[in-house]
Length: 93
Image (tube, rainbow, N blue to C red; front, side):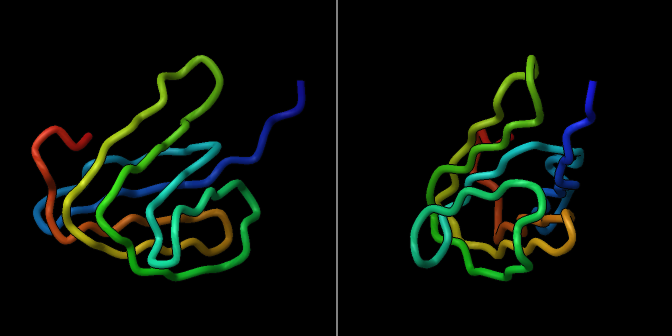
């Protein structure tokens, strides 16, 4: 079996780390619309709009979906990604 590449992801709020782990896919509400991110994505920094986030850790693992009414920042570089949220809504992760 060939190991699939993954993205190291951290989801961070001002007061805590909400998620940290490897994922196969990330969808975020970017400033120009929703972005889907897979391993080996080009380097990118984008502001985030309020909206729905989707994190797919891998096959057989439940998809993580949450939304926020606050903005933030998204960065990916060399299969390391970070979602930095201004604050956390109740029910997020």
